[in-house]
Amino acid sequence: MKRILFATSNEHKFREAESVLKAYSIKIVHANVSFPEIRADECSTVARSTATTAFEQLREHVIVEDSGLFVEALNGFPGAYSAWAYKKIGSKGLLELLKNEGNRKAEFVSAIAFTDGKKTEIFEGRIEGEITQKERGKNGFAFDVVFAPVGSVKTFAEDTEYKQKKSHRRKSFEKFAEWYLNYLKKHEG
Ligand code: ITT
Image (cartoon, rainbow, N blue to C red; front, side, top):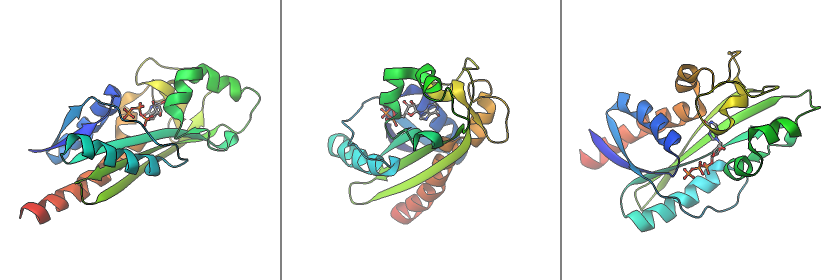
């Protein structure tokens, strides 16, 4: 098994990533730390910067992930500010903002940044869906209770198996894993 640090203060993110990566025999170790994040509209910009900060402190190959929910009718809000928005208004607050809105389209985005201290690589995953009319489901975290992905009538919080198969995080981590196995071959072979 190959080991790599995943720096995140979010236990849910870690578990979702772990379950994708074990199929590739890549073992991630949880560095339960959070670093100051820059403000930017794109998750990839935030992730790239946080990876550099994480490497400076941890001095090991590290990945970080920045993600968010981009709601079309709100011009992409809360987007890269999702963690902050969730703390402030929660998913009930988001439903309130969309109360009289017919356009419920939204997209989850996950951007992973890997760095070895010399170069940083970015991997993105996305999933489109709709914001439901009310909260549904008990599993998952944060906005999972109000997000129903295209192709399913259930929210991520109602159907975690579907989330695990199709999510933005599944896609970004699969891209990362495929790239990382090659990276290891080149650097260790
Ligand atoms: P770290 O920065 O320490 O990794 P965090 O939770 O603060 O943890 P982000 O800054 O990337 O991570 O914020 C991501 C936020 O986007 C998260 O807190 C949720 O509000 C939302 N989000 C992202 N992915 C999600 C998912 O799969 N399900 C529900 N909400 C999600």
